[in-house]
Image 1 (cartoon, rainbow, N blue to C red):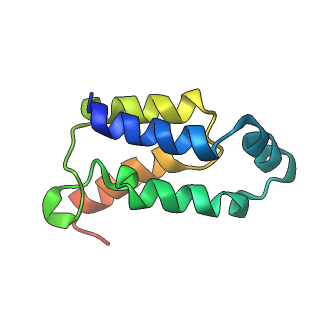
Image 2 (cartoon, one colour; image 1 turned 45 degrees about the vertical axis):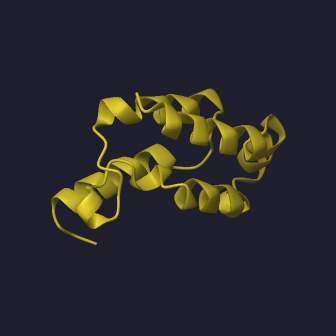
Length: 97
């Protein structure tokens, strides 16, 4: 597990993915409400953690990013961040943008 990456995820999620935020997104079904949170996850490189360095990512194996994925679950993140991490990894492996 990459503790630095997990701490970054926990920090962002603790600040922005509050129970009130989660309930609000679930009630309204408006994922656009999570734009600021999504931007923070992306700016910290969390969404590209599994992407090779040559393609702008951190080049971590899935096991090293597990702490981030668990943090998403722990905070009930109502955004498809885990899906995006895996999709970006697969797209990078296929050499697709």
